[in-house]
Image (cartoon, rainbow over all chains, first blue to last red; front, side):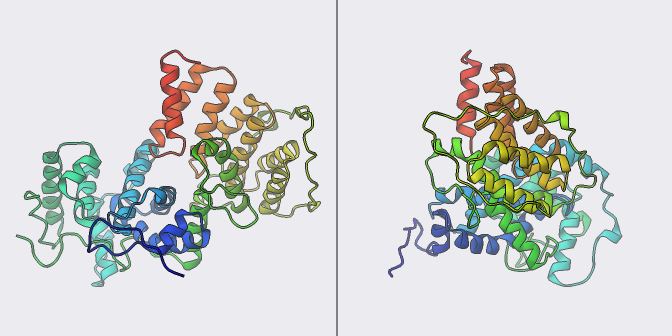
Length: 197
Length: 244
């Protein structure tokens, strides 16, 4: 059987995974494979975006439901995972807005960032846990701008569009967020070049 | 000047920052997403690639069927710290069975276990009754799940499913509205979108344009990517312009 490919705009973009098409056509097994592969990525992205671990699975599920429902709109102009990241991020923001009141009560009840909350084991997982513990100390607007720009890879104008605010506001949030993270001890030194988009 | 080390790590195959979960937990999460997304399990009537207009009519029942069959998703993933209080019987209106339509085919018989032994058995029984188009019995069975308050997730699922049946098949929008409100009160959950949409539909059926408009506005605000977003926006606009 000849595999059919959905054409891409960009030549360097990998061909769309057959699972995407099968899942979009309602194939549960294909959708299961696809979502199983996406789940860790979605959970990690949500954890980058939200404070604490309590809501990660709920919001990741919301995001994956949005991915599943939106599969038929995926045109392959970008890599599937990049598209899915944006859908998950958008669904996460919608979820945060939706449950803003009850979630904010929970967030306010969370303890302040303390030294003992920051693991020091020098492996990648521990490093990322330490990083999100630092992110938890940032205002959400700065955090979201940093994650969308540095983790998801969105340009400043794209983040601005997503956040529905001017690009300069996003640049300001990025600057403030990076400064604060460095004050808290983040060692990363990249990321200061987003003013030349 | 950027260094080799990215300011924040991108998304990759490495673990973290989310806490690790077991494979079983991952399977549970994915199954719940598939159910909530309308890809039903074998044997459960699902909603697949049907025109949007048909979605509006069928999605409420179909996605509830999928969710009812599994009793997972958000309720399974996060145990409620305190289970919701069981609804009192007075919150569930008695069923008034509609007169059968002329020439309507007789609903098929379903063989059911006489005494379901678990929430999923009872929900499964309700699902089978609904698949057999035995609306009043299916509704009663869902409401048994609610009254027995077997588990928060089962109760929540049954509330939405019973509400859909009362609204769509038993001509009881008032009873449906009570159940949708119970579900919203006990949520949020995977059927929240359906419940909010149901409140709008039930309010419309009751002729309460003000409540319907409020419900539509809530739906649009909470579900900006919702399945019924376009319909909700159009209907809200019509109501705002004085339509009914």
